[in-house]
Length: 331
Image 1: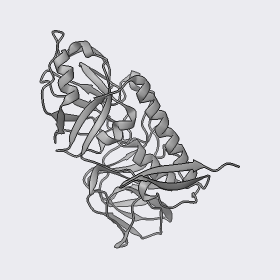
Image 2: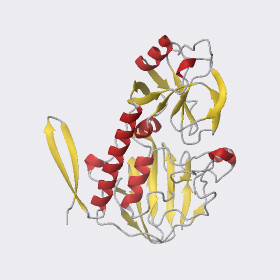
Image 3: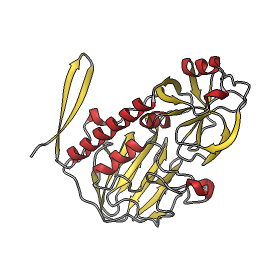
Image 4: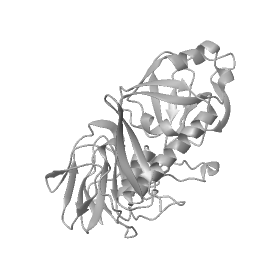
């Protein structure tokens, strides 16, 4: 097991979410940045859905009470027994070792994956924490957390620099308009798609509140008959300021939704810090599907590379611009 000596700012146990229970009013929850969490799990030989520690801004201080492997995913300075080590790299910890980390240099969320995953009892098929329903809790000093033993150590121990996620505090994210476009004027939609918005400090895992130009509602107003709230949906209440619904979103809501952030851009949104800037760009459903399929193909090839079933090359295509190729090894 591991012991929490200092929980950091806000650390919880998360996996990819509690799917299949929204019709009963149970939120999905799960990690905020699925790409970073999945990559960390790959490097320690876990299933991509294995439970990890997710931390906000500053990670926990951890003492190991067993021999295991771990990876810290994020742009952060980390130390094992006061010796600086590298993120996105697998290390072996021994009984008595202590892991510490500083504040994230970029991004808002970091992840710690352990070989075998965090082995707490699942609730409704998931180990994700959802504090509003009192499922799990924030990590606290003195917590002792069991680690699993089911894993296979891969060949590659460190993610190449060019494949590591990059976190920016000024992003353009792609959205599909709707499903309540008729609740907004043509000018309101134009404002939404042409303006920069700022992430406020009144944001959390449930939703990111934005400040900026107000979005004009049509005569139908801001309210709708309550319906489902998908991941990345953008509600616009009566004040005209958008709210992006994220991992801990409620299952249903009564505010009109002007658009939905596409799945591949959710991590870019999640990794914004308060004060970060965001702009929206419209894409079609077909484009969103194509981008998701492309991302999943890339992640699949990265996983094969980590397990020695693909090769990695980096080809310079123009000045200061690198294109990444991960090619599957053919028998």
